[in-house]
Amino acid sequence: MSQYEDTCMIKGDGGRTLRAVLDRICDKWTLLIVVTLDQGRLRFTDLQRQVPGISQRMLTLTLRNLERDGLLTRTAYAEVPPRVEYELTPTGRSLIAPALTLAGWAIEHIADIEASRTAYGERGKAGR
Amino acid sequence: MSQYEDTCMIKGDGGRTLRAVLDRICDKWTLLIVVTLDQGRLRFTDLQRQVPGISQRMLTLTLRNLERDGLLTRTAYAEVPPRVEYELTPTGRSLIAPALTLAGWAIEHIADIEASRTAYGERGKAGR
DNA sequence: CCGCATCCACCACGATACTG
DNA sequence: CAGTATCGTGGTGGATGCGG
Image (cartoon, rainbow over all chains, first blue to last red; front, top):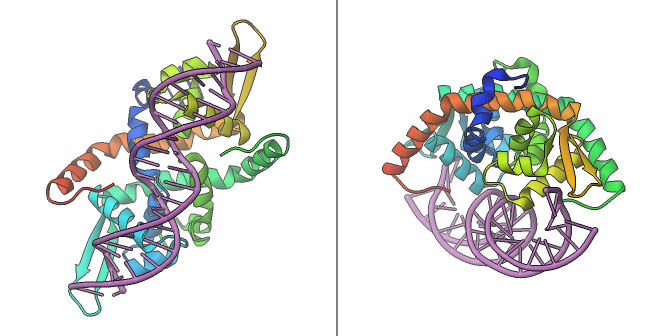
């Protein structure tokens, strides 16, 4: 069928499996936070500093979703001032490799893509 | 630093590289179409049939963006009735492996995620 | 058959202000 | 420090109709 015979189950289902995961992790911040947490336990503020551009709101929401999906654990300490730490679960850590595979592809091809996009834009219309 | 020493350049830039590619391919349909086109040249209608749930509009838009990024080629035949075929470029084909890596992860962990999400939902509030 | 244009609903996301 | 609440906006994507 293709060069990936053993992945027919992925494509054979009309992409439903891939879709399911894309719907979960393909938002703006999820993969980024997962990769950042590869370092180990981090506090809320540390995450906010290491993921430039993320708002307090989106950080909270994304962390909640990741916790809900069992990809990380949230540990709150009853101290003053408060301290909350986030850490990947084994499932969460298993996402790092696929995420970095994608990132590796990005590094290799982003230049080509930019070039192609520029060329296309110059001879035609604008896209999204 | 972590188990992925050689990927510091990815995380060291504050996630900008990962963000750049996420912004491009992490929409609702892009990866799905790339994986579908692993089969070879396909017509517009074939794609629409093999990617259940995609609207004509989104298929058109996604294909345009992929063409613009140099990931696939669009070939129109001046026939009656019209025929248009889409095929991955080498760059496009190189995306299949990372995409399937992600898909493989999905297959392995989607059940756990669903379970965790259900358990979380039962004892708390609704999310996104 | 292909796919563009228009209209429209929704939600992801950001900015800001306030709380334990 | 670590959130929650509220509001506003733009982009994403679905439905429909038309044009090549």
